[in-house]
Picture 1 (tube, helix red, strand yellow):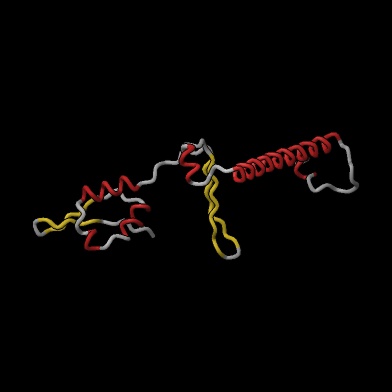
Picture 2 (spheres, one colour; picture 1 turned 120 degrees about the horizontal axis):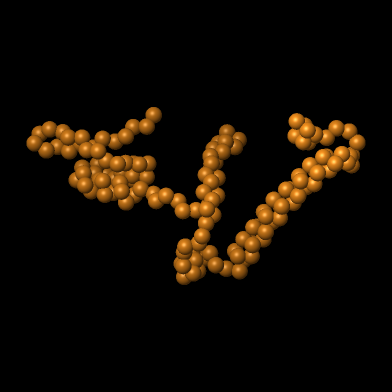
Length: 149
């Protein structure tokens, strides 16, 4: 159950609910603010904080996020890929540009692409072998039901 915050403003001895366009990031941030400081915010300030704390939509070619149950605990997996927008100066400052990291990145990427190609090639060759009727191993095939439905 999700509870949306309703902010109240006291003027002329009556409470007026204020509509704040909140979102999860804003809600987490505002919970950390001391109540006395939070009471000093005006509705326009709260709306401004909600607007600037709203995450911008991702601009990645691949944006895959999933939560997986593993051994009774949940872990998250995030895969992001897209055009690099950081400057070379920033990348060097963050330690992202080095021969070791670049080499490992190339090796892992090449391995993933080669693995996908090999699995695809073996699958296509197996299907072609089955369609032709060539039996390399005697007995029923575990893929027979997939090729001949």
